Length: 317
Image (cartoon, rainbow, N blue to C red):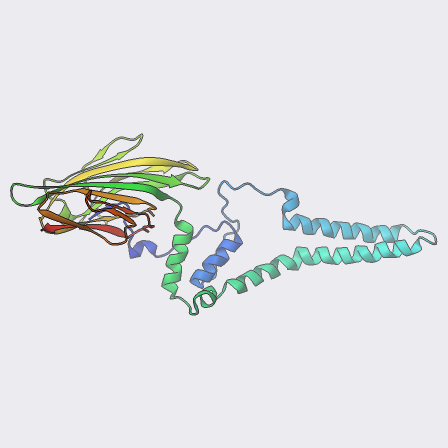
């Protein structure tokens, strides 16, 4: 089973820590996990333009309070003769009302709104689905929502099956994909392949080619996950841009077997093409949106999330 590294495992999803961009985002996590959001003193803002001072609620409340105070002070400092004395009294009353409104906006309104949003966010699944999800499910959904930034817009897989002299099948694979970064920040992208030990016989060779980087070769056993052999590296994807990658490998497998193509990054569009001898019957996973059986080509236009896979099967016809 060849996978793009890094592979996801249940233990990698424990102890999640979120960097909230806003209090509203923390409320969504609260709704998904039913845990109180742990907010830092300052929210993490990554390459986000700060709003102008006059658009900040705190400054608006402060301005309203100041105007009310000045109007009240003006009404008590300046006394107009009749018939304008009524205007002076009106300015004083109006200033007091504005002053009270500013104090409420500055001291209470923002906290009341936060509490209202928090109350609305609690029990979100009950209103959407009619029942409340398990906490583990909500925690995983929160992680997917806020931690998924990079995605593969297009991926092509070409497989060539050939019989060997000892009756086995040599599987040659070439994969090409384009990784997209739609955000406004540079993001790290760990790329590579992962194999089970049984899939790495002596005849196997694996290469990983990254555009603009050196070619990587030779798999190594993962000391943190015995039995898994990996090959890969890490690069950074610039903001609002894409990078292309190519991987190729060859493995020897039985003539009645299968091979999985799993992903660790969301994939939007996948095309699988297979060349095989006439005496081998080839089948693939269901879910493809378009197929050319004669050319042994299948297209999967549906989304593949991390951990999902396409299975290629072959057997004697």
